Image (spheres, rainbow, N blue to C red):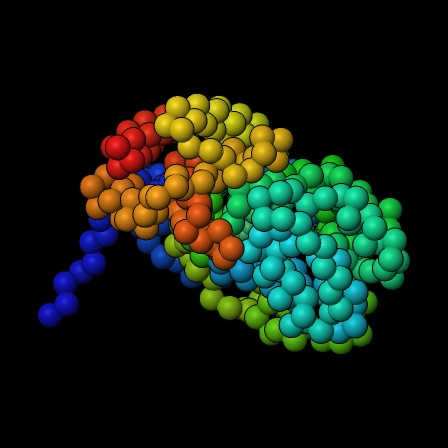
Length: 371
Ligand code: PLP
């Protein structure tokens, strides 16, 4: 007989998922109810309201997609890009590359703005791209590049798109809850995030938000959205305001309890306090890492507090160290992706993981392994 699975107790300081508080796990263990039950409908309304708080938006169309961040990404592209639409897509790491892949698969015509891995997106390059492509309809960029730890200036980039009359798609998977994401102030038209990073819920849900301008563009489409599951016109039948809900798919009920609880915890802490905590914990970790002689990949002005990328010291077997951290200290940190594989470590300070005890453990464990 196969035994039940009992996961080891780990401390998660990688690029996500982050540690999940017991309160969130307890919420998920509550009894499952039906997805059209009036009590569940009330919970959905509360989740929508709390996500508006987290995204700093009044957008009515703000809800969690029943699938991970990649599905939120895909929902933005399949709904907002029609075949032949020109899209300026910024690539300064893995996730910008995935945006590009989405543009191609929706039949859009991509104009790629490349920046070095580890650097922020250069607003001047985006301005130049719009100058050479005045017919571009959408600008897409990643706010917090998890593959490198670089944060781009979302306010400046969104402003360039507005001046050019284009819509903006923002990836804020790693920033939401950890650093300011101000959808209304920046006038972002479509944004997607993930439940498993600075919100400290389990993976598998993708909060999204769409502006009125985005909805107008979707309603004016000449072609049907090619994905049935992600077609906003259909999903809305389930997530729209009380009274008229119809079956679209069976919502993941218990994970929604978890997301609700993690948002209640964010409300209790206060969004701005959460941003401040991520910043303060980053400063402490940074001091310790630099004390160990480790160097950051990203220059200080563009550094994400919640994702600390550092160079692996010369001559060190990075995979062997990560494996020791896991087996001896139960500590997970991340490896480099793509071009940075083997060269960097990524240390996450996301959500519930952004705390002093984790920093102490990480510094002590790294110091022991690097001796
Ligand atoms: N975008 C960014 C910036 C991410 O960091 C991630 C996941 O790490 C994703 C998108 C995809 O999210 P998921 O893995 O939940 O599908």
